[in-house]
Image (cartoon, rainbow, N blue to C red):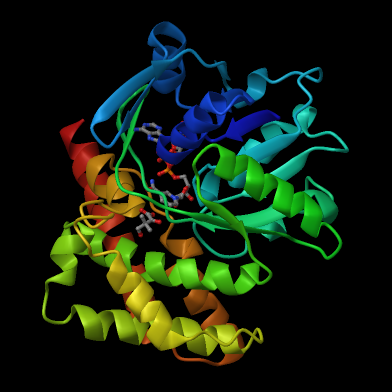
Length: 317
Ligand SMILES: NC(=O)C1=CN([C@@H]2O[C@H](COP(=O)(O)OP(=O)(O)OC[C@H]3O[C@@H](n4cnc5c(N)ncnc54)[C@H](OP(=O)(O)O)[C@@H]3O)[C@@H](O)[C@H]2O)C=CC1
Ligand SMILES: CC(C)(CO)C(=O)C(=O)O
């Protein structure tokens, strides 16, 4: 399959690498100049658990794509706030047959994608794989993960199955699900707890899981997500989802991972996706008249921390 990874940061590079190894024709598209330059010069470096591989892989900036680069599949892996601009920039390679698979964290990305792609070509998903950038041109991951995906509109189930099979052939453990909106809420509960809390406390998931209030905090936040989801006719199984979140603490799987929000804010001093996770629940809560005090507080605290880190950065520079 001819595949573009639009947003080839930590996870996009990892997916691009394994899909190329499985025999697909993969192109990485990314806007970070140092990263693109490093991949062009030295190849893409990928550390999977203890082994490091280097591969030559085509890479370019979003504005460099050309009409003749027709893609069968584009996997979008930007940060939430970069998605609209990325799709705008890569319009020339989105053809009538091009499928878009969105694996970003957060809720509601289909509203942006629908501006650029007919609904029949949109596939939504989420992933429990993890990754972080060691530096430009080098991504590292440990542990195992999975992908769930589904077609946005009825009738394209077989295409979704084909995409899941393509990802699984590359070892990405992908499954077709018949209820992706439930699955996106379930994953958003992982991010709505782990990402904000580990970022504020500056710890990985194993360390957070050992704290005394961990269970109460996670349960309260998941209950807020469930109260909002109910207004969209999605009935979350709170006990199962709390246990799914708590499985992330396991140091033998992904417990040592610092969530992507920690990497954005604490490591790279960049703004976070909080408005697409807990912030999205707060906005929906207001709309439906559902109180969401923990999500509101967590969103506000992350924004405080963004401001403090950016002010410190401005003083240092
Ligand atoms: N990392 C993880 O373990 C997981 C991530 N996700 C989700 O996947 C999506 C992609 O996340 P992830 O792969 O972590 O994203 P990254 O932050 O690694 O990369 C996203 C984009 O950010 C820019 N960028 C990243 N680091 C730097 C830097 N140091 N300096 C300048 N620019 C930089 C690049 O684009 P540009 O230069 O154009 O800004 C890059 O395409 C998100 O929605 C995330 O929530 C989901 C599951 C796990
Ligand atoms: C690994 C995981 C599940 C942690 O919340 C994630 O999605 C992230 O890092 O953003």
